[in-house]
Length: 260
Image 1 (tube, rainbow, N blue to C red):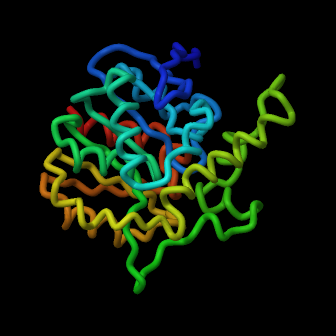
Image 2 (image 1 turned 120 degrees about the vertical axis):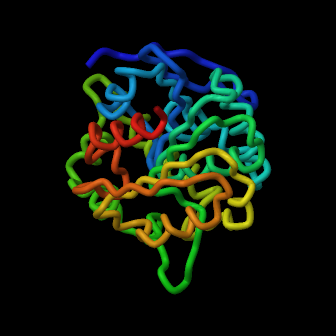
């Protein structure tokens, strides 16, 4: 697995990391809960036939502290719009996972021309009191890995400090990622996105891990019912909430087949 090219862009006055790898039509990806402390096999699978561009969400690893000045949903949407533009993803296909999927879905709703096709892996944003999601911020730290992945060791490996990492700064960055997501999605991941789903015209793939312990499978149907554009739902066997970590090849193949 070769390393991606690392670029830096300015977003809202903060240096923000952008990874880029592969060739072919551009495909953006926004990370799920916890962000991306390191490159992962899923992205390599996508890069076999696409130019994969991965901008960091403010506050996530690589996103510096830009989340600290975002105080409203509008603030987040404006900075996400700026992020995608500066990462050279205007009008491209965009994939997202979990919290990242919800952010890119909102961008597609507010600026329809900014996205060609969407691939959303278990997005946050909805809340049904009869079938509530699991609140990841209310869990003990040692329980989070088992909620994010069907195989907790995969999530632990993603979060483990690499050799040579600053032993003080690394855990701070991981906590900051959870804090950044909480600023927009706490409590219970509810952004009332149902009010905006009808504005999404882009063809949309909804992917759900068969063993998702965070977002109930019923939410895939709720998203599909609300989105105005054509939707496709696919379940990834043996995967948890972050299906791209549990089943990188299968999840990437589903996305690439959909995008065409």
